[in-house]
Image (cartoon, rainbow, N blue to C red; front, side, top):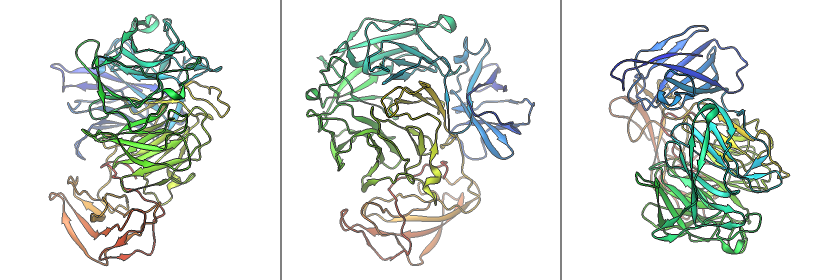
Length: 586
C-alpha cells in the first residue's frame, strides 16, 4: 500500500511523503476500498479523508499542522476488516529504516488482532521495557524457562515491525527493574536485582547504528540518589503519568534471595517521582510521601488528571496487601478501599471518571470508584481468567477498553449484552506478560507464562486494537442514540439526555448523553422523574431532549433513597460512575 501525501504545514516547500503499510496479520481478505483519514482533535466535517478503490493511488494536498497521525482502514463494502495508524506525523523517523525518502509507517492488521513479531528470541518472561521517541522499544533482562535471570537486550523497531537480540549484553543479569526513555535513543535501567543483590544504582543504555549495524552501548552503573540519599528498589510499582510524563516508582524491596526474588521482610513504602530533565543524566529523582502500607510486587496506575493509585503486592510478612491507596496531587497517600478474601492484586487500570479496575492472580476482576466497589462478573463484564502464577498486568486501550491476558473487555460498557464487548485474542495460554502501549495505539506484549509457569511462544506479540478514541472516531449525532453511562457524584442531581439531534457538533460541558444512577454491590435503586422534560440548546449548535432525575444516598452501605421521583420498574444489573469521552464508541 502506498500513498503520496504533501506536507505544507511545517515546510517552506511541499514535501512528498509516502504512507507505508507494515503488515501485521489477519490480512487474507481482499479489500474493496482503502480509506485514509488524518487524525486529530478536529470538529466534525473539517477533517481530511481519502477513499481509494483497488489499484488506485491518491494524495492529500495538505496535512494539518495540528494533525497527530494518519489512519488507514481496509474496507470490504462498508465493513472495516483491517486498520492501522501511523507512528505520529514525523516522516524523518523513517530515514534509513524504510528507505531513503520521507515516509510514515502504518502498522496494518485486522482489528483486535495480536500478531507475532519476527526476530524475537524465545523462552523468556518477566521482561522490562520502554519506548523511545524514535519508535524503538528496548526490552531488558527477564527470566529464562528455568527461572534464571537473563542479561539480554532486545530491540523492537515499531516502524519496520522487526525485533532482534542485540550483540551487546548487560554485564550482569537483571530482573525487577524499570526501564525509562531519557533521550531519543537513550534509556535508564532503574533499580532491579543483579547477582543476588539490590544496588543503589541505575544503568545507562544507548542505542547505536541501524540495520545490520544496530547495537547498544551499556555504560557503568551510576549512583541513584534522591535529595542526596541513595535509593535501592526491586519489584517496585511503576506507572507513567499521562499528564506530564512523570514516572511513579513506589514500594519494592531492598533484599533478595539468591535467585533475585524479594525477601519478604524487606518490603518498603518508599515513593519517588522520576522526571525528565534537560541536564545530565536526563532525569531527576524526587522523593515523595511514602505509602500507607509497605509492599512489593504491587501494581501502579495514574489517571488522566494525575491521580495515582497503588494496589496489591505483598507486605513485610509475605501476606497479600488488601488496601488500595490513592494519591491526589499535592496530598499524601490514603487508603480508599480494602479487598476482602485475601486475593492478590497484580494488575490495575483506570478509566475516565475514576473507575479503577483491579485484576487478581486468582482471576477475579474487581472495580472501585469513589461511590462504590464490586466484582465484574466473569463472562459478562469481564473475561474468565485462569490463575496467573507470575501475576497479570492490565493495559488501557482507547475507547475505555482494557487488555488482560488474552482478552479485551469494556468494564463500563453500556451495551445491552455486556458479553458482546469481550474479545478473545490468539495469544495462547498467557499471563504475566509485559503490556506496553505505544504511540500508534498498538500494544507490545512481551513474554508471559502458561499455567505451568513455562514461557509461552511466541515471546513477542503486537496488538492492533480497533481504531477508537476521540481523535480516531467521530460519533453520528444526526439521529437519536441510546447510549448510557453515569456522570453523577453522590448526592448530586443527574442530567439524563434522552437522545439528541444536532446540526453539527455539540460542544458544551453538558453534551448529549444518557445517565443512569449507580447500582451494584449495594443494590442501588434506579430513579427517574415522573414526566418532567424540557429542551435545551448547547451553544446554539443543536437541540437535546432532557430529563432531570435526582436521588440522594442515605448510607453507602445501604440503599439510596429516591427524591421527588419514582423507582423505575427495571433495574440495571450493574453500573458504576464513569464518563464516556466524546467520540468513543458504544
